[in-house]
Figure (cartoon, rainbow, N blue to C red):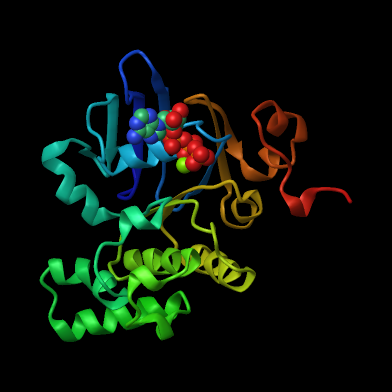
Length: 244
Ligand SMILES: Nc1ncnc2c1ncn2[C@@H]1O[C@H](COP(=O)(O)OP(=O)(O)OP(=O)(O)O)[C@@H](O)[C@H]1O
Ligand SMILES: [Mg+2]
């Protein structure tokens, strides 16, 4: 088995007792896969990503990231391997400026300041926001904060990328840049999104979640062309595939 992978077996989770949010999720994701996670509001997409990085560990079943079981004691190791972009940037960003926020993780790993500077600058350039370097986060627009969040995971070199609604609030040029960035990342990525055109452009495999269970798992070009399947689960064809 390849080095980089995620293995989920029999995963179940509830925020409140007797109200399951995820039920019996089984998923193997390999080293070079790009997997879109789609489904209606409340289907459980964000919850699934959160569990992968251990934001809650009281789940049933098992999650392994590169053979490491996700549990409280392994979280520092797991978070070294995974770059995670939250759905809501305000939950992710906590320093005062873009620079300070993006620099936080590499500094935390004890990298010398010159290397931190190099990485932050490179991450800012990759997402196209070098001009926001010293801007206060609380004065930024939603899209600007999303871009800072994405830059934040690029300042490390994660094995695995998880992104929750990464294109939310992005303008067309920044969205296209994000698609190119995702396509240039060669390791495992899981992307939860309502932007089915972004999934179409970046993910070869798609998982449809409905009320906490995986109802479909297979090639994106089959799932996202199947109007009936999508409609059954509260979705529509990607805009680029809709007949006008
Ligand atoms: N912190 C929480 N406490 C209690 N219930 C929660 C919490 N977060 C989410 N839920 C519930 O869990 C279910 C799944 O939510 P989740 O955020 O995973 O869905 P989602 O598929 O990401 O939806 P969206 O498309 O709206 O982002 C929903 O019914 C939601 O109300
Ligand atoms: Mg969500």
